[in-house]
Length: 216
Image (tube, rainbow, N blue to C red; front, top):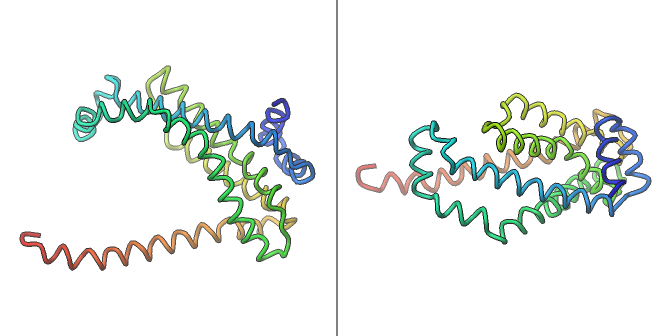
């Protein structure tokens, strides 16, 4: 557990050094501990957000949201207290990081002819430090002061996270920052393009059906 917090701090203070250490040591126990902590924080963040949404503190929200609060209050209440939700949110960081590292490992191997899947998995785990901090701070401010982080803070955390992922890719595949940048964005661009194609196809299918409905 101590190594987990040491790596957490090193990723914040000296990311190049941290990811080089990860590449050489591949600390799996520290990684598992970190992912478990991330899962717990994710659930607490989700729980506090939903509790706030259902509370009187959110009374000044737009009318449509207030209506949703009244209509689905009991459903949401049962949902956030469900043991299955707790388990899913704790396990989700493991699954998401495994799948993400697998995709980027394939892309990186394709362009560099090198692979180090375990090191990339560990690196991607600790590259999510900004996301963990963002969730924890947001949950803290919402529970104590009743408001979420401003959007510009969220953007800063996202940019910080992207930088860490790019540094991690550069260290693991031993490439320069430009190549690491390409490896990082290629899968994202492909997913966006596939999403656009799917949306257009779906629209082309649904549009004639809607036009055939009287009064639409």
